[in-house]
Length: 591
Picture (cartoon, rainbow, N blue to C red):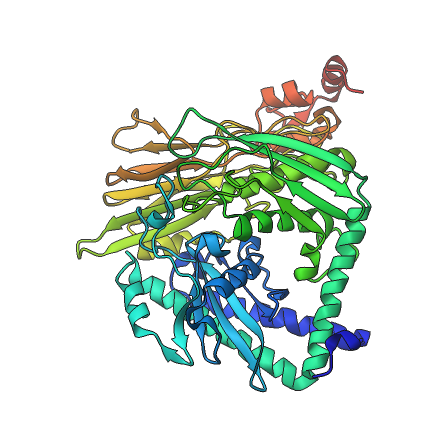
């Protein structure tokens, strides 16, 4: 093969190959979620897929949850340390999920297939997906456990197929160690099919354009992504920028908040994300694997800030190049870089808060690029129970949050935000397969979003009723630290969670933001209220007609409109009293 570094691919061929890479990654993702059986993959699409070279560089990635696809290079590095037999063979299929060998967290299994061309290893096709139950201490999700060994099955460089032959002992082991074995095995098989398809398409690409040309194009595309990222970083003034916030607790010690401190160091065209000063690692699963999650969240945060496809004039490919100018630092033994064997399964909300604080830290020097505080959490709930047959049912659900207000528009309502990118699960699908009913699913109406010239987004309220005795584990955040307002905007609203029962309407239990293995009875209802986003800009500059629309839509009250926006709304006529509004705004100090 001609050295790819000695080849310059012409612009037209380069764009054709770029499109080919991206199409392969998307096709891999489509196969994975269309073939899967559990709703967390099939409906929510909690997955990622892509192609990688022999040096573990990301060549392309599906448009999926960033935590999944961005972590696969770390998985590959971990597999290199632990690979069964010590080497790859054509026909191998490896499963890997060990958080101290690169995995994002244990439920995210990676399936990796080596790509051979002319009898040589030239790359890898791989994917990750979140599995419904891997035999952990509590069904579906875990929080309050002592170590990584309580997280369920741990795989490190383990071959499910060796030279094309199945490892039946390992498949049987998987079947016998999950509460949802049928779904788990079927979903892994979908991952295998997806990865094998990616390997096939990779070889077809090499055959059509030639190995040297394909890898030369991959190098140029990575260099281009790096160059554009460095250009955007270079537009930020050099300096150190700091922000901090507080997480509610670790899922066990309810009276102890956990500090998250982010310092951004900008030097020329490079950035360091330093998490020094954040809380020490916790005694529960509320820690973050450094290689597979902490670093990936930082990369994703800057891609959002610097290379957003909706606001950039150029679309920069998603590949390894955009990671190169970014360094991530977290002291060993901290919540973002725990020492083994600390558990580290419940790690998502910390990553989302890190991105939220990156945005806050850079707000003074990037006012037209940032947004106000988002819900910056995740509501990840595991519902489970035992059927009369003795078999478990397990259901995983991700609930939506809200973005903060933006420089030119309100924060989007009821949507995954920042690091999260999953779809909601159809309620009809839930009722067909699980003994549960959704009693309520709508925009939150008990508290308004953060007031601003551009108001914060509105979160979700969802009430899920179990029809049989069940267990619930819930991972969420921001019950104590509201999303922040910016440039005169007001803070948003904290989240909350309750357990009720229609037969006992006066018996409402206010729940902490995270809890493990809670036993509930038939007809008990968990209701989750996600945080509302913070406001952007002085609310006295918001057009009165927009405030009227919010009142008529039930997003805020007449009194709220008067107090925070200085707008006098007449509900009887559904109009704004403009003279009274002018007097109110002058009294409130409108500039």
